Amino acid sequence: MLIALIALTVLLALAIVALLLRTPPTQVNSALQVSEERYRNVVEAQTDLICRYLPDTTLTFVNEAYCRYFGRTREQLIGTRFIELMPERDRAKSLDHIQSLIAHPRTEPFTHEVLQSEDKIGWQQWIDHVITDSHGRVVEIQAIGRDVTQLKVAEAETVDRREQITHSTRVAILGQLSSALAQDLTQPLTAILCNAQAAQLLLRRAPIDIEEMQSTLGDIVADNARVSGVITRLHVLLKRNTLVLEPVDVAHLTTEVLDLARGQLVERHIAVIVELAPGLPAVLADRVQLQQVLLNLVSNAMDAMSQNSPQDRKLTVSMSLNEARLVVVSVVDNGCGITPQASQRLFEPFVTTKLQGMGLGLAICRSIVAAHGGDLRAHNNAGPGATFTFSLPVEAQAI
Ligand code: ADP
Image 1 (tube, rainbow, N blue to C red):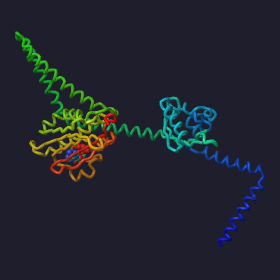
Image 2 (cartoon, protein in one colour):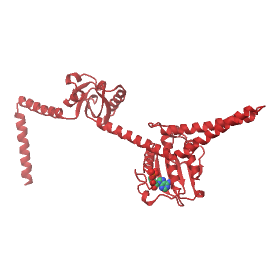
Image 3 (tube, protein in one colour):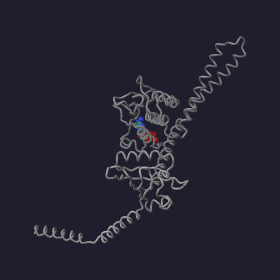
Image 4 (cartoon, rainbow, N blue to C red):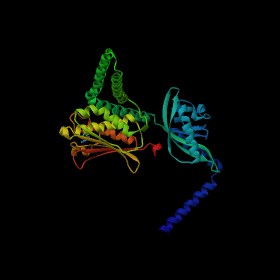
């Protein structure tokens, strides 16, 4: 049976070869034309954009979809450099990509902006494939692309919304601190008034006590600096800003945050301990966002200790450098600890055990820390309370 099948296959192959040998050249040509036509139809019927271009980006072929996308005819496009269809800012990046493809041929998606018309910017994603001659030199590049403008717009909207939520929660935390902050402002302002009145009295005395006068004026200057420090910090935190990375001294940042929370810490009788590791290197971070993380953790710790007796409320902020050269910051309290109910989904949005809670703080803190290449974790202490620890990579120059 098997032998019969093999014999039949061989016979069939021989018959096909004989038939092909007898086919006149005109028939071969027309078969080729049909096949070419078929391929052209496939390429033209694509909704994807297809083109071929020379290494200097001169277009040698474009399909219908490509023409439609740019609202131009094939004649208008072929012979022009597609780089001119891109905004200036994206051109160098695209030329670099082509050079790197020629040097190391590979298949990988490449996304760039395009000028659909004079005032309309779109986004395209392309997959290029180099075509080489018999010496292996790249002569042309064939590419297939699609419009990804909607995807890019959606991505930008998501980033924008995330920024809005991050900002809103920052404002909400400051709202919680506001009564104590008001006190932070009124105390030094009152002191300034008293000292100014004292200075007026001193001026009326004869002879004027220069030393006392100097000390009174010195107090006024110091109180003024306190007020403007609080206002500047508030202003920075209330302003909506995009991510700005800079070297940040975590110890200094901690002092700033504790200064902002000082009114509340005093009001709630919370003893604060700061444990510094000497010579801690700077981290590369967005100062405002990092302040937000720390402020959120400190604020949560204060809430967690609200049921403790006033003599038994202790907040420790410690900083160190670990073996992986990450700056590690821990916020430790001796409060109620993380409830089993919250512990499973602690960093998920809208998880809260507080009556007025939004449950967004920790989710945002974790995403901020992750965006900085770090990590935020939490655990209950062996004794009472919880510890929240985040780590951040050291600034490159400090390595
Ligand atoms: P919110 O403060 O609005 O509840 P968060 O995301 O900041 O939102 O916190 C979520 C939950 O995590 C809190 O409701 C609380 O149950 C728990 N939690 C946060 N910090 C602590 C802490 N220091 N000790 C105990 N539980 C905490």
